[in-house]
Amino acid sequence: MDIFSGHAGDCCFGGQDVMPAGIYERRYTSLREYLETRSSQQADGCVVWTGPKTWGGYGTAKWRNKTSRIATTAHRAAYMAFVGPIPDGQEIDHRCKNRLCINVAHLEAVSHYENVQRSSVAGKTHCKYWHTFDAHNTILKSNGTKRCRKCNARRQRELRARRSKTPRKETT
Image 1 (tube, rainbow, N blue to C red):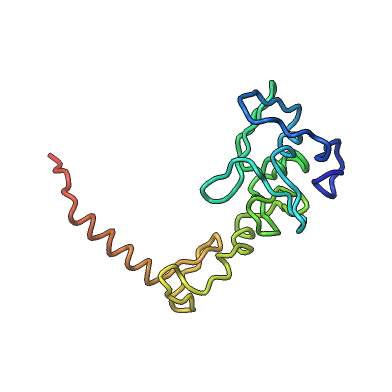
Image 2: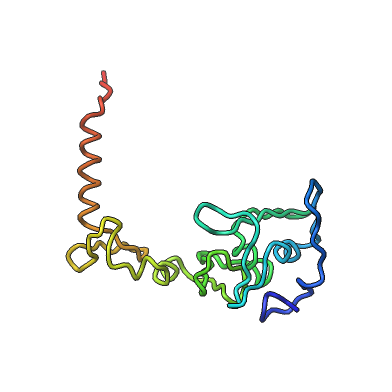
């Protein structure tokens, strides 16, 4: 059974033996095999990455063979392995909102603006200091993100204060 549903391929997950713990060298014949051995199928349809993770909660995939080398996030590697190259200017969005999911049926190439609009940031009603995002207090940036005017003003005051305390080099 192909764990990356909706895409034909010679990959299968079931029937593989689990290797014993210890020091050994892993050799994968393809990027697909590498991704499959480090993921597991969930009941909700997500294929969850079980390999290393970033601080931000995304899976990291580092794979190489004699002809190629990939060091990127796991969902980008899955998209490249099972769908094809990521179009220029596009990002891979998790439609399921699970950062560890590498199921290509849940991944979609979108613009940065679209990715931000779909994110949890787009639906926020308050900044991290609980100032409301309303018409008066919100700065909408060109990439689709929001910024709190009150917090922005505070940051600018702190920056000016730091700069005024820093001794300046004299020019001669």
